[in-house]
Image 1: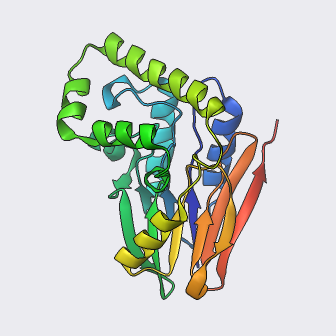
Image 2: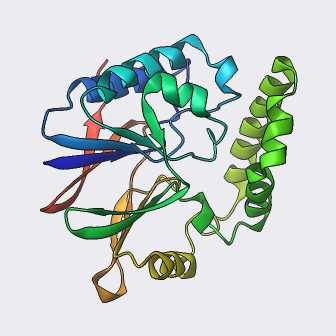
Length: 238
């Protein structure tokens, strides 16, 4: 038996190659899969459950079908932090807290998207704090649809522009934040995405930080079982 983890797919209507690769991955899930965890940024931008595009609704229907045979868990990312209960219900996804400790195959893990670990990026962390306030989400969700759409697109464009000028070290996780999270959750392993730097990092005291990759040029999947962790690449097919 095994469990799969994916993240940073950044699905959008203008990247059907990513969508097709993800659907193919879902179609190839076998009966010995215990669960699927999506660690945020399933979509490149999310303006609200009530504004979900047709392709996103198709993804929801596909996930719903899969959820009939195995549980699908979702942790919000920085691009789709506004996915709500409405879309989760349609897709059959179980929403998890942004930091989720759990035991799998007799080992203690902690799961998260990963942006909260990039503590050197002070400007982003300030924005992250603001966007997580419940009143900020309430105000946004009650704005006119066109306004919400424009705000989301502007955030997306600004993020892309700012990231190109930032020091790469600032955009990676801070080791002290990783150590603190492992200590606070009493975990041996941490699994996250966000940085788009897939790897299995060996830490002190035989602890590990496992990073799932993005889906820009190929699919990236983490397969976890009692035998260990394996990062897999799924080539896109024309």
